[in-house]
Structures are given as C-alpha cells and as structure tokens.
Length: 249
Length: 249
Image: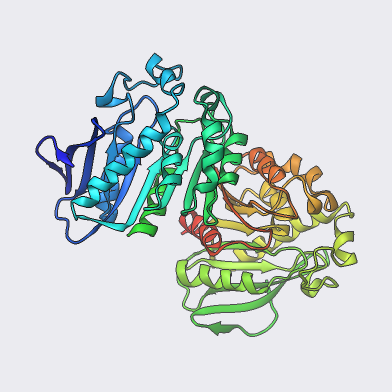
C-alpha cells in the first residue's frame, strides 16, 4: 500500500489515498479509518457503482458512517477505466460512456477486478492494522456486477452487501452480467444482505429475485423497497451498514 | 372491555383476559401491558395464525417483548371459530380442521373479523389507557389473511406488519384469499413491513411478491428470508417488532 498524499482528518475520520501495484497495473484507492484507531480494525471493501468513482458522494458518506458509528475502516478502489483509471467520468447518463460499454465486452474484466480487490486486501492486511477475520464487502449495482465474482472467489470476505443487480434487465443484457454471475452466485457462501429496488429500471425485479435465489449462502436475506434503481432509501442504506457492522464489529 | 379474570404479572408484564361483546357475539381476547404503566400507551393489535389461538406460544413471547423492550401494549383476540370461539384447535396439520376449511367458504368471514377488530380497538381506547394516534397491527399468515382487510378498513391503524401470505399457493386457493385481497390491498395505505419466506410452501413467493406490489402504501418494504412458511427466523421476528416500535413508540 503506497501512500500517495498526506492523510486528512474530518470529524474524527482519517482518510488517505493509496496505490496498490499488481502485475504492473496501478490501482488507486482510498482508506478511511478512525483518527484514533487502536488495535486490529474490521475492514469493509467498498465497490462503487457504474460510471462513478472511489470517492463518490454517497460512498464517502457511507465510509464516514462506518468509521464514526462503528469504528470500521473502509477501503475503496477505482474500478477498471473508472476515476483515476479513466476515461469513464461520473455521470447519471444510463446509456454510458463508450469505455463503459466496452468494459462489459472484454473477457478479462471480472478476473482483473477480482485480482485488484484481492491485491488491495493483501496490501491492507500487510499494514497490520486490520483484522483478517473481520473483512466485509459492500457494493451495489456495478459494485455487485464486479463484486459478486470477487466475493465468490475470496474466502476472506466474511459478510457481503450486494444488490441493485440481477440476471435480467437492460444493464444485465449490456453487461453480459448473467453469464458470469449464474456461475458465481452459488459460490457466494458468506452471509449476504441483498437489496432490491422494486421499480428498478436497469435490473428488473424478477432477475434480481432470481439472483438472490441463486446465492449459495444459507444465511441470506433480501430487503425490497419501492423506487427506481438509484433511489435507495435512507432506511435501506442504514440496513446495509448495520448488517455489516453486526457481523464485523 | 369486560375483564374475565384477575390480572397476572410475569416479569413486569401485566396480562388479563377480556371479552368484547359486539352484536351479541362475544370476542375473547387478552391484553398485555407494562406492570407499571404510566401515561397513554401505544397499542399493537396482534392477529394469530391459522389453527392457532390468541395466546399461542410465539405470540405470547412477542407480546411480552413488545411490553418489556418498548413499553408497547398488545391486544390479541381469537379469530372466528378459533381458540375459545372453537372448534378449531391448535395444530401444525396444514390440511386443517373441517371448521377451518369451512371458514374460508363463508361469505361473511372477512367482514365479521373486521368488525371484531374494530370493536376490540373501540373497547381498548375506551379504557383511556391507550393513545389513539399510536395503534399498529401485527399479523402473519392467517394474521394477514384476516388482518389485511382490517388494516385496509381501519384508518386508526398507523403501521402494520403483514406477510407469510400472498395471492397464490395452496392456502390462498383454499382461502379464496386472492379475491378479497386483490380488492383490499390497494386500500392499505399505512406504512407496512411485509415478510416473505422464500421457500413458503403454503403461499408461493410469486404470489407474495404480487401482494406486496399491490399494497397501496408508498412507505412499504419487504424482507425475504430463506425457509418454509413456519420457519420465520429470529432476525425476521425482531425486524417486525422493531418496525412497529420505531413507528409507535
């Protein structure tokens, strides 16, 4: 974990950008932890949504809440071609940047992200500050598209928040999401909270339910709220945080 | 509210059986409240499941938790032909007592139960001990089959826990549940937590999802857990209690 700049502190939350180098690829990330951390901390790996980046507004707020309310550290990285790994910019445009569309046509996207995340976890644990037995994953929408294969492949993940994603719908078709994830879903065996937006226009609810059913975890639950893909309620957000906090704290 | 016996107290929970008389019909019930109640209490009306009765084991435990953990009073009544209103006995047999099967062939079952519950609420509020603005309903399975029409018809219900029920499946077909409830679901407009068991063998999940979708409430959410109809997890049970407590306390 190579630190890229000085740490900053905001209301008790220590934050510092880092880079992890893997096979010549440079993975930019951010780590958040309590300003006065003591002992071995739980850690949540947080995957951002499509056409977003590691320090997006909602993710930053969530990371700070993990730190302030639960004393849980958070690490986020830019997904391939996102953020500092460009050229994909933050946008609400559902059609997408050409590079975003291309990302889902490449055959190595999922395996590269799995390796990026595992290398990030290796680097974080190598600092000696985090408890290898208390690591979770949080990622919705593209954070599940790219995170589900990672959780399926990484036994160090002890609990995961997934969702806003499924086997069918416009974003699933574009992302060829179903192919990889029908194979990987049964391999997700850690406790899972799976979030569904009833009126999701990008991943339809039937395909989301099907994905939930396919998850291999015995200890899983699904929370469903009315609303479009991007309209996750505060109640739903809080439930995701409390789910991981209860299992990692 | 005619008291039928002396009150008993168990670890801070005051309990007393009562009768409410309505149009010559006698409705037996039980009221639970804090032993040292002060002020105007929130009240949960608790509907039991099919072939059960007002003081079933799980319901008794739930009522005591509402009282002890949240200071919320609970009133339960026997459903028509159940408990003291016989002849339906407590059983796990899914086929059912002939009187249970007959209950769903009668045309007046839903309207009678609606009136029974409203009369019970009238009687409870007439004691002056409860806050008319903080009344909730809790009922799963038959507690929804009979409770959904009640919640739809009773504006004094401010929040409801419903579920383990849907438009389709063996119990829905037998209960002609779908007919009445397709009409009533849009009239349920208070906040709702709807519980679904993913492997429910009595009400299939698709019909449960359909019922959730039909609920008129904007403020609704659905929690789905693996397991058969009768295997509600502790996590799911706790969520139902905390949902009502957050809205009534």
